[in-house]
Image 1 (cartoon, rainbow, N blue to C red):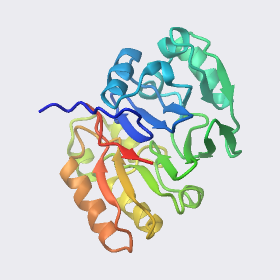
Image 2: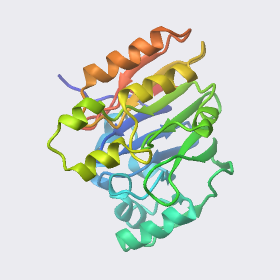
Image 3: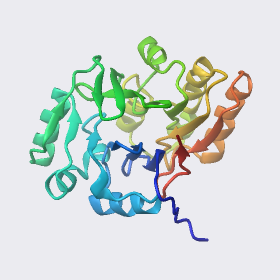
Length: 266
């Protein structure tokens, strides 16, 4: 089956890769096209963008949530070869320079303060994760608002407030706790993943989704699934059951690690 998308203009949102092997998301309008995170190589980004009819040379910036390698791996090539600016807070920018030994063309934002970038109004907000200043994003475009929130140990009151009334949500459903405990992973890994600066479980994602559901919610991506400690079927079952208890009629799909996910259009 040919999975190649052939859209003349991709004005919408599409996860290109989601998970511990690398994260990269596309968000675009007719005027502004950005990536959110770049944890896969530039060549992979280019290939995946091509599948949805987007050329890498039209990307105008990369928003970075935090400096873990699965979110920044592709920055050196994107910044140096393609001259794409990197939008990050000061702590994350310093870590990128240190970890990757490169100095991208940074545009520094302040966590908790909104800023404009092209067509988008971006609100970066704090999430609990094991880096100095990790963020998630609420991004308002000309037509719709999307909440992008993964890599967090638990949903704080701030997280819930920032994600209210979004049209689209990209939420972490990383693991099933029983599968983490039963895995052969070392204790330090289990403690990190299950801790309050780790990752959201299926149940935690479902509870967050229930609190955010509203009649205008159109689509929810379940993101950053663990390949060993979760399954697509289980994540969809738990989140779907939670969503069915609300007024929302949103589509619910997986953000895949190994292939381009189904896009949504604005």
